[in-house]
Amino acid sequence: MENLFEKTNINNMQVKNRFIRAATWDEMADDDGHINNAFIQRYEDLAKGGVGLILTGYAFISKDEKPNPGMSGIYDDSFIEEYKILVDKVHKYETKIAMQIVYGGSQTEHPDASEMIIYGPSAIKNIVSGITPMEATKADIKVIVDKFADAAVRVKKAGFDAVEIHAAHGYLLSQFLTPYYNRRTDEYGGDIHNRARIIYEVIDAIRKRVGRSYPIMIKINFDDFMDNNQGLSKEDSMEVLKRIDKLGIDMIEPSAVNLSSGENKVPFFKGINTVDKQSYFKERSEEH
Image (cartoon, rainbow, N blue to C red; front, side, top):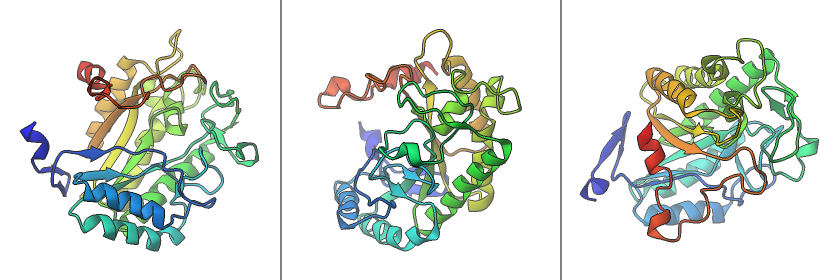
């Protein structure tokens, strides 16, 4: 337990303890993703509580799509100044803060999803949402990679201490890893490193834009828990984790989700209200 209160370093970011507040969906921003005083107060309260590092709820990087209403945005420069206010409030308590950024794809629960431009690795109907995306062309993939990089630059300009790529839970980057959703025959489909190519390109693009010393983190599935070898396997996930470590990712947040069921799509997230429900991926992560 004493180790939890020790300082630690993530790249050039020193964190005052090892308590990290993971990202959650805030449902507090306006329709365009801009934040308000209540949003800022939530994170200031977390910092007051003494946590060492806060990860914000996921922010959408493209104005054309977002997976949930109430999400914060980071798709253009108009967000930078308001996030500076948020960051300054958190930093008053010597707490570090990182922003999680995401491209949702067909894993969306937004009521206006039918009016959005939604891409996927292949035009396969999403089991959970029922939405069939457009298959992304290689030109579309390049645009998405650039959007991630542009968003990361804005995150840094706003004063955040790090950026986290959301590549888990069935969102677009996660879908590229999943054989059920990725049926491509080009260099972005097939074996695991082809399916992970877009993730490698996102990491590389962000690193080139933010520099070597700025911390880049990633949240990524280690298992999709799908039947009949339709999902990302533990073996393939290990290959991706090894590769992104070599690419210089600074922190990996392993996660998982059941991509097979709309009724029980996240079977582990039932609410952490007892000690035995904490660290629900501890044993599975140790296996890796």
